[in-house]
Length: 329
Ligand SMILES: Cc1cc2nc3c(=O)[nH]c(=O)nc-3n(C[C@H](O)[C@H](O)[C@H](O)COP(=O)(O)O)c2cc1C
Image (cartoon, rainbow, N blue to C red; front, side, top):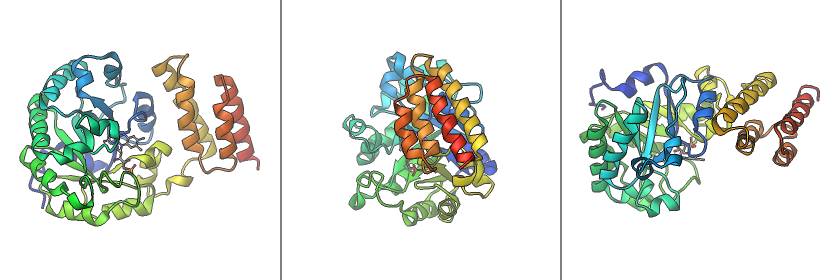
């Protein structure tokens, strides 16, 4: 039923070669992690969400979220905020720093602090303001295509994803990402494939399905809804190689050899060091290592051990022992 101009739609162009899209993940899809993701993926990657209020005030911390590396293409910058005029101002500042391939508006974050400011999923309570925000963003973005990311609604009795998809089409959005849960669901239960299929069947613009894609069966299930693309979040923070594995039809859980995994960890440590500096990189990098190794024999003990290490050398000594045991059980 897609009625948008399929020959000029830039998301569809990207999806022709790669059905997958990397989700915005606060505190995770930072420049060093995106560099790691690029080892396995040449499709669209979104930044973590960035506050329009922070950008427009040129706050150092917020602007640091806009830093990019040479491999950051194609990139979407995700914005959050509740006032149309703030998007206008923020995008004019943003354009001085970078020219992303896409700008996305976060209308699905369920976190209380974000909702309190009227942003994220709170926007689903106010379709008129949300449409105003999309219009303002489109105008300020100029040639940069705009996407929106929504949930099914605030809760099961106020499902209004179709209303959002309708105004997204009317206001000229490039695509809508739909996470198949409501705000009340948070991350519990399973994603609602039927409602994603319903959204896709009625939509006049590309729909990106999102939620619970972790392996080949769940990827297939999402594709069966008919969506134009599939966005992966938690699956990639634990297994950034998921893109390459799924594109090769393989299960990400046993896709990486021990040697390749070890090299990847070493690489991520170097990237994090450059991004955060010698003094501050160590604690942040441990969470990724623990995610990557979760489920392997001895990983629970490693987790506690790693958090007590104080230096990079201590951390790698422990990892060397861990990998030795894996290779020579
Ligand atoms: C740690 C974490 C951070 C997230 N940060 C964002 C964010 O910045 N912007 C956003 O739109 N969604 C964010 N999300 C939601 C994901 O983008 C995605 O919609 C959700 O996790 C469902 O997809 P999944 O089942 O593949 O993880 C976040 C989720 C997690 C777990």
